[in-house]
Image (cartoon, rainbow, N blue to C red):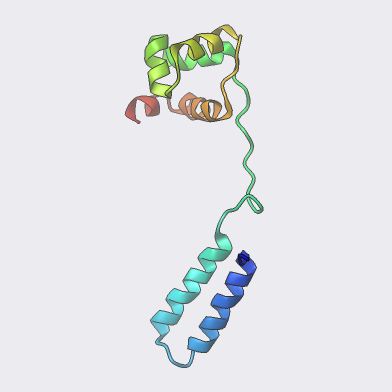
Length: 116
C-alpha cells in the first residue's frame, strides 16, 4: 500500500516537531523549506494547462518560412517526417499535441528550433 502526499506531509511534519528541541535553527529551517516545496509541487490534481490551439496550415507554413527552411529541414527541426510537415501545410492532417506545443513555442520564437 502506498502512502499519499498528505500522509507523507504529516509524517514530515511529525518528524519536524520531534526534532525541534534537538536541532539547530538552520536544520529546522531547511526541513521546513522542504515541507513547503512538497506543498508547492504541481500535480495533475492541482495543475491544469490548456492544450495549444490547432494551427492553420498557413500558420505552420509561416513558422517554417520565418526560419527560411525547406519542409525537410523544418521537419528535422521538429523531429517529424517531411511527409508530416507537408500534410500539415496542406491541411490534410493536424499536428499531434506534442508537435502543436512545439509549434506554438516556435511561433513565438522560431530560432529556438534551430538552437535546440
